[in-house]
Length: 95
Image (tube, rainbow, N blue to C red):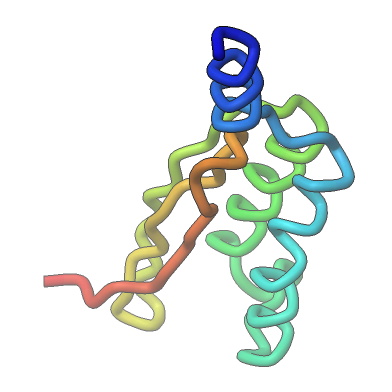
């Protein structure tokens, strides 16, 4: 039983590989493209891309909270390294 508990805990706290982190951010990048929010046109998206890049490269959890006044929104969320948690980014209204 002790081995089963260790195995379960190891699976619960598994850190994402670089490939898994890339897969985590793919839907975010696709949605930004769909919304035509480009880094070349918005400094806020450029900042988000830097955070995403650091997450994929370094494998450290990233908390996102970027004001985006041009569209009256804030980009909020977290890029999670642990497989027991989902990464999530959303745009919320400012105010």
